[in-house]
Image (cartoon, rainbow, N blue to C red; front, side, top):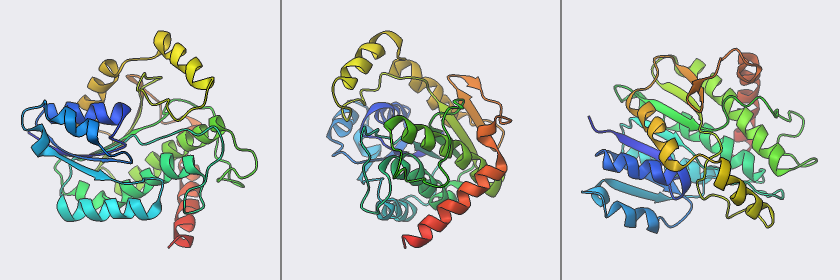
Length: 276
């Protein structure tokens, strides 16, 4: 049975590879990304009827307004979606703010995923077996939420921003599953360090060091994509599942504490209220 799948962050890396994999399987794919999407469209031409089943929407997912535009577009044109895949992330060595005045990593890596998941919930619930696949850092207990400075205005570092957003995504999974019940399967998936070609935004010499490291230690997209795709075809039975490189992550870890998840939801909703 073919599916309709929305992939956020689909113009490069894992998102692009997964989009092409699903097109080969006969699915309709709505690919959302900040780039022009030319490489994705060109690759789709090599798949039978791929260009007919590919829908591309260019959007800056670090922007709250742009996320809301994507949600409106999807709900109008695709009132039923079977899967939402969240992969968009772009590390920055120096602190950067979005047009909304938010720290960029927080906005793109966490807040966009919050908005898209909740905003597309009705379209997902119209599917017989809906699933959200949130590709983040499940299983990594490093890092924490900076409750008194979530926008990292004081002690910013790229690593700190990435770890905070990763922890926020774990908590997002907890809160979403609690609100949605067992209708939508929410999967937090950590693929491990992957050679996804997504290091262009990093400065030298860090980019070169990571490129060399990736050559010896990174997993290839050919290794990462099949298990991700399988989760879309066969969602786990539980409302919330966390997986680290194929191994289930116990939801008893401190990174999945319900009270902390509720605290983050409250903070997030307050922030969104001030942005309206």
